[in-house]
Image 1 (tube, rainbow, N blue to C red):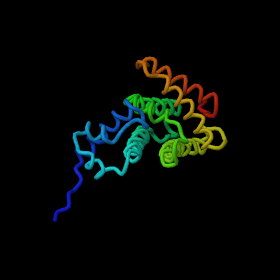
Image 2: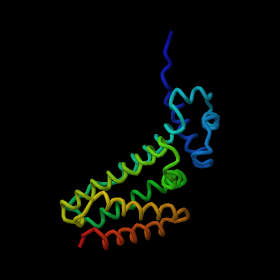
Image 3: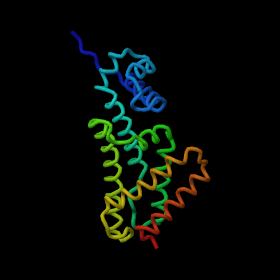
Image 4: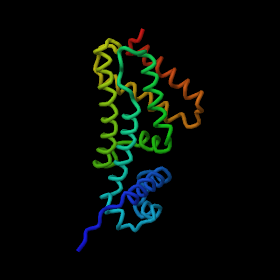
Length: 195
């Protein structure tokens, strides 16, 4: 008896299909049957890769967070700090704008629908807040971020970014750059100390 090894191409096809179905139907209306059909696999094949709909959604969330983490540069105190802040804002917006439909789904999903789903969304929020909180703590060490609870400061910044992204579907590059400038200005007038 031979054991089949999961196929990376099928797994990738399932992730692409899940992204499309989730965006089009919303999390609660998306069906595993539809995801499998769009990926060109049998429903049983879906379960070789993912336990349920929540598992594939969690992987899409983790992928989005991973792309944001990869795009953000660690603060270099010897370089222009304002430029680095603007870069990190710009990079985050660019990652979210790459797949705005998925970003809107992930950012706009409400908590409290069921325990496991709430855990997935909470993990996203905690992951992003932890990432920014570490960056802000580094900034406090460098003297470019005001004293304060970095988790709360991160939550403020993410809240501003989240609302801007959710409302920015039609932003072109020039308007997106204005968003970067305005958000950096908002943060600088709040808890950043770049001057």
